[in-house]
Amino acid sequence: MKLIIVAGPPSAGKTAVIRQILRNLPKRSAAYLKIDVIYATEDEEIAAEFGIPAKKLISGDLCPDHAGIMVTADALGWAEEEGAEYLIIESAGLCLRCTPYTTQSLGIAVISAISGTHSPYKMAPMIALADIAVVTRVDLVSQAEKEVFREGIRDVAPDVEIIETNAIVGTGMRYLMQMIEGLEEIVEESAITLRGNPPLGVCTVCIGKKEIGWNHHFGVIRRLDDVENLFRGE
Amino acid sequence: MGKSLSSPGQRNLIMYTITILPGHDRNGDPEPFEALHLRPGDTIAIVGPTGSGKSAFINDIEVFAQGDTVTGRQILVDGAPPPERFVRDPSCKPVALITQTTKCLADLTVQEFLSMHLRARKIEEGDRIAETINLANQFTGEPIRSGTRISSLSGGQTRSLLIADAVVISHAPIILLDEIENAGIFRDRVITCLKESGTTVIFVTHDPLVSLLSDRRIVMGNGSVRAVLEPDGAEASILRQVTEMDNYLSSLRERLRSGEILSEQVAAI
Ligand SMILES: Nc1nc2c(ncn2[C@@H]2O[C@H](COP(=O)(O)OP(=O)(O)OP(=O)(O)O)[C@@H](O)[C@H]2O)c(=O)[nH]1
Ligand SMILES: Nc1ncnc2c1ncn2[C@@H]1O[C@H](COP(=O)(O)OP(=O)(O)O)[C@@H](O)[C@H]1O
Ligand SMILES: [Mg+2]
Ligand SMILES: [Mg+2]
Ligand SMILES: [Zn+2]
Image (cartoon, rainbow over all chains, first blue to last red):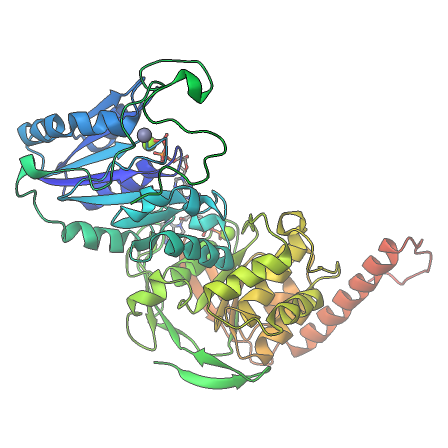
């Protein structure tokens, strides 16, 4: 079994990239799991289009990446039973803080080239912990703008592989497929862990306390005047 | 790979010969040519009806297609498949594509945008920014200022700036322009400037002046190259006339813009 984890902000082009991957993989060699917070239809679309096993998981009150890490072991078992060689997980990656990538997998961050000059900085952990950053919608921006965007990615993740694509037609995909070909089998499923540090603890907001103001909470709290960020990626 | 040629502004432009190997038309039938070579400094027009595959043709060049696009064409650089960095690293890529829909979304001023581009290219600023803006202003009648926000530039200003950026900052030896003639830029000046700098230019165009100013014309139909025409001076007389007509229309445009009523009597053509 080989695990591919695709993350990125809403509408970045994750499903479009996954469609291109599925088009290039041997027929019916993959299983697909979509994790989203409230609503998703990709599982049905992908199942209909490619005839592969597909599932979705609505994370509801949980952070989607939290939900993802809870079910990944089950999902690997399911993909195995379905006879798949690849499990592709599409994560909603909404909070831009968590990173869903695990060890023994290929982590792909999908970012849209039209999401603004500063967007790579805002998603630093999601990009820095990935193996590959796929930049979509390069068909809509100028050469100069592509270079400036790439510079932003390089700033937050000097070593990440960058692949630029028009995900609708699949340009640049041959490089992504080369990396997928080089992906190794999972050696020991029980040893798979998250690559990044998860967010700090469980807090009183997470468990449903709604009052505003740090003095109503305990655990990890923060005042406006506390200077440093509590978290900074890795 | 490539030879060096000194261009205006004492910079070296690396030159490449691009070869296009045939693919197939929309029915899957092979294209009727063996290989098309684009040499440094060539000016080429792509003509044909809407939907005939003009944009697909230049997109093949932009992505260095290796039989992996709808057309099945393959693009070679100096006779061989291009090195990976040409395709993957935009700052090594010798091709700049500018289309009608190319957007510049950066929420930055012209000055800041060009400065970020220079930084991405690891080029010393020097007077490159002023040089880029000056060149852009030769292509457009509506002056661009360094403090203008990119997002408030007009279509013509944006395209002029992107072409100037491709010449002065990217040093792209190959520039692809997809139907930019309606954007309100001085097409003849763009062609002259790009010719002088030794840039290979491919225009997708419906414009007679641009077509006639090009050295060769590629005629498209049904997704395939139909013919490659090399008028070789045969159209010189028509070109003179079209140039005159174009100048005449430009002068009328200027007079209308300045609020004149054009009351002179002219002979019917
Ligand atoms: N022009 C262009 N459009 C793209 C590209 N990639 C994706 N799109 C379009 O952008 C829209 C959103 O793409 P999706 O692949 O659904 O995005 P997503 O990240 O899966 O979205 P969610 O799963 O809903 O968060 C679709 O209409 C795609 O066709 C691209 O490279 N170029
Ligand atoms: N050789 C080909 N085989 C299959 N489809 C093609 C081919 N050439 C072009 N197309 C498709 O035809 C459509 C129109 O082509 P396009 O290049 O946009 O035309 P034009 O720019 O001349 O208006 C596009 O969707 C394109 O992908
Ligand atoms: Mg999706
Ligand atoms: Mg077109
Ligand atoms: Zn989270």
